[in-house]
Image (tube, rainbow, N blue to C red; front, side, top):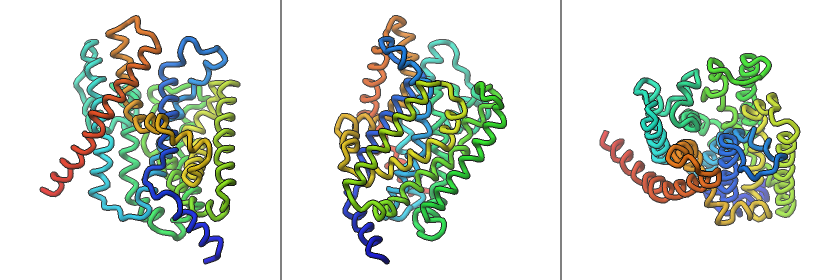
Amino acid sequence: MTLRNLQGIQSLASLPNQKEIRSITGLRAFAAVAVYLNHFGLPGFSPDWLNNISTNGGLGVPFFFVLSGFVLALAYEDRPLIIRQFFIDRVARIAPTYYVGLVLALFYFFATNNLQLDYVLGAHLLGLQAWFPTSDSGFAFNGPAWTISVEMFLYATFPFLYQRMVQKAGFWGNWLTASVFGLICSLVPFGIHLYFLGQLNGLENQQIWTYALPVHYLGLFILGIAGHKARSYFLVKLPSRLIRCLICDLLIVAYALVFTLINLKDPQHPLVAKAAQFWLLGIPTALIFLLLSISPRSPISRFLSSQPVWFAGKISMVFYLLHVPTVWIVTRLFPNSSYEQKFIAVVLLTVIVHLFVEVPGNRFFKSALKKATQTN
């Protein structure tokens, strides 16, 4: 082992030994808000030149798939993965908020006399809606929750990927190998998507499977794992904390500027948008996660780690899963409510559900599932 490699490993060991990197948690808030803007647009007072920003806000969704791969690899980098406990933890993390969002959506459809009790509801109750090939099935009820169906699939693949990419340091455990494999897994569904969409004029109902099918996002998940695996390599190549912080912040600023300019120039940009949806977004996103994780003292990292931004990121999953049915219900009950009032209602409900449902629900599900598995 060379001196530089040893220094890199020591530098990695000197970083805070936390399974949560606060700056990355804070970044989640911006992705969740981007999705909200995509669904409901910008406030009315926004200048016209900003209106295009929300068009591709849905690209906050693939951000979360890359994030899942990164944080799971981080969580299990130095401890064994016990499969039963792993799935208990994953279900406990998702289930409380997922079912609150589904109940809100069912309440809305019941109140508007549009509730149908059929196989579609069964698919949503089981979190399998993304496996159905039409938007009528996959996006029914609480539309954004289709991503939870994808996340469940990605969780199911993680024990296999953990054994070969996280736990081992050989060919498949090399970050470059993982990156190339993730890119290949992303380009295949991207090619399928281009073939079926032709001129990319939009998503027809019968073509939605090329967008929502869970297996299509496996590549982004693997790119997240690759980003985590590359941490020690980048610490060796960038031993200076100052240089790491500088590169981290410059990359994030450049990334934000390029994305903003693309949106302002032409919000449709279908080829770029779809490439980002399937693979293009994964590369810089994994790199940003990597740099934030090894540059905790950079200005942007400290901003993202600040208490308000960190807390906004902490509740981002609740915000994401509740925002659509909440806006529907508020609009139904208060037809004259403003954009700002609806947004505030979503934020308030998000905080309440996080404190009184998500956190205690996580503990309850862990305890209940653990007892059930021990009994069996």
